[in-house]
Length: 193
Image (cartoon, rainbow, N blue to C red):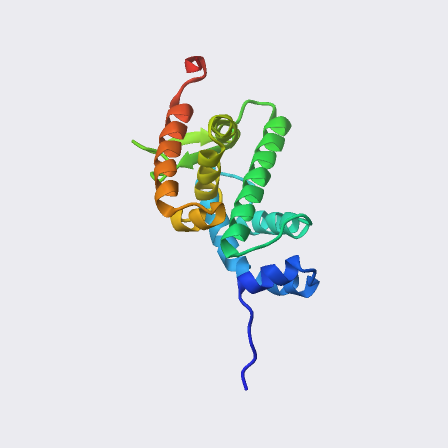
């Protein structure tokens, strides 16, 4: 006789319904995926970055389990929220690092070819966050797609599920968002006008 092993979506829905044990059973199922996403992102960080993938995952998970107002629907939504959490943690870490050093040293990330249109660009994570905020003021959906792709490592299909949009719409918006980000992040400070 086999026992039913609930998947991520079932555990998320049970957690939303108030089953705290579902939350505890969820972590082993999502941990490796979260860690891979964190490691992938941190590989693009500046050399000597002090935050490790395990620490990033643990901090993101602590913030995720503290969410009380989210009605978890599915795996894609969970990883979308995790992407947002990781973004906030990395930006907070970069700001704290910048404040501590007061020497002008910046936390750098490399926009990989998935983000950059022409060539990889070395970008400050705080600048990236600011660019995403500017893009959100223009088009929140495109900013969210970029956040899911860059910080969450979600595929276009996963992003379409999280945002409840067609894959074709997400693909079009992603093309525009990455071009916009490449342009915004390639400008020198005196180019803003």
